[in-house]
Length: 155
Image (cartoon, rainbow, N blue to C red; front, side, top):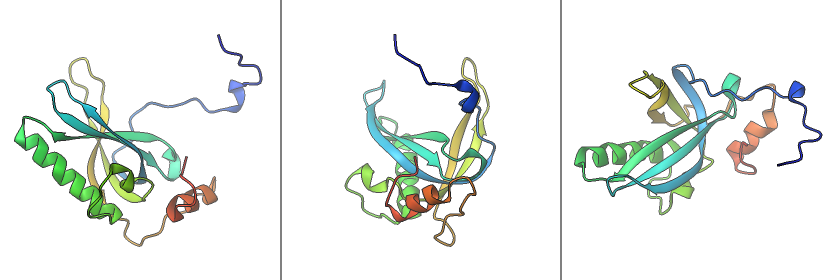
């Protein structure tokens, strides 16, 4: 058991796990991890965090099959990784952590429910931000600014 004295759910908005609406969002990669697949391959699992707007701080994930028996899956993953590198202007990363905390635009879509799986978000594209600046939100403008200049992660 854990002591929860001092916690008041009346003062905190509940977490939402609903899918994000289709659209473009400013985001950063906040975490990355290489994981084994069930077929003996490896995939790079990326955690992205929305920087501003109504969905600020929400997370979305992408999985890149960089080592896989299916050559098409590897080709798609490498193309996606290239798009990410171009979006954050890190063309020859030695480690996935070099891609962290660099703002970019992501285009988010919704994958319909299928079988036992509920509908989920899918990242359709990674692009550089047009003007190199992040729109500041009224709620936490310093948090977003700090995410851009690298002085502090956005979370």
